[in-house]
Amino acid sequence: MSTAKPSTLGDLRQTEWAAPTRITRSVKDELRENLICLLENGSPLFPGIVGYEETVVPQLVNAILSRHNFILLGLRGQAKSRIVRQLVSLLDEEIPILAGSEVNDQPFAPISKYGRELVAEHGDRTPIAWLPRENRFVEKLATPDVTIADIIGDVDPIKAARGGHLLSDELTMHYGLLPRANRGIFAINELPDLAGKIQVGLFNVMQEGDVQLKGYPVRLNLDIALVFTANPEDYTARGKIITPLKDRIGSEISTHYPHSVELGAAITQQEAWVARDGRPIRVPDFIVELVERIAFEARADKRVDKKSGVSQRLPISTLENVVSSAERRGILTKEKTVVPRVSDAFHAASQEAQRRRAT
Image 1 (cartoon, rainbow, N blue to C red):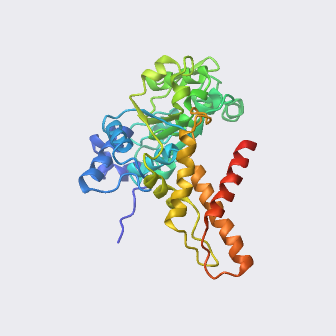
Image 2 (image 1 turned 90 degrees about the horizontal axis):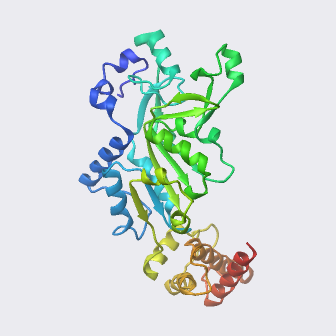
Image 3 (image 1 turned 135 degrees about the vertical axis):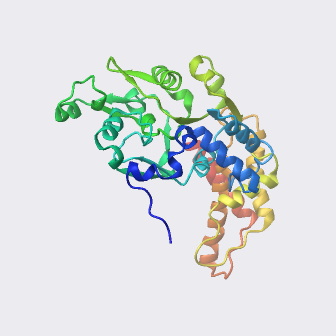
């Protein structure tokens, strides 16, 4: 029979969550400890990530063991976003927070004024909520129109009027994505596209734990693991990333396209939608290899822009079109089993080329 989870601060004091090591443990410590457990047990670290076992994964392990903020540098279609999202599996299944807290306040060490006042008012009767690990991951695509209010927060005059607070009061603040990711992972995709002033605000929170909103200083001692992704060309360009922020990124991890056709084919077969309803489908190995070699030839072609690269999505979508072409023929000719031919591959590759030229 499962034991009921603590619902008040007093109940929580009677559990392991009240241990000093638990109270002071940071998110990066949590990621590190859970990663060590997986390594000791020989458990898979990043299921579904093919071809990175000897290259990218060791770098990721080192970065997490070092408690670093890190950045994944790579071209399109190199599984950067998938890797970042799988970091959630290294978090505890759930953690206790103060009920109603927008910044996931640690019950024994709240950082927000709301949390401190809640504990001061209710003491051991303070209500506790439980936050699952999937809700401890916040992801944002960096675009030029992202504002400091989106990332950090803003003063909310309506909240001030309803609560009878001064605008300078912390309780009038509407928190942005970064504070709401407190005690979790905050990921920013395409970091160089983030405006310079937003990068400054991000750095201030990382380094000093404070930020100014509309001229009012706000102290936010956030506990966050920061992860970024970027195109290596953009990342190394001058003026793209402010130096203090770049200096706070402890590890730079380079991703890559598959080093062999066999690895590429394994990824494509894993990701492509081939198993469909209706007639049985059998895709010969030479068809899969042919489709994969299209991508390899394109990556080696001097006419292809190396800054953009040839995404792994190209052979994936091409293989799906190959199967669809054979499926259409099978329906029209009433074939019992759908088997792609070489002509289907040429037809699909032509379609894919036309689509990419149009975009």
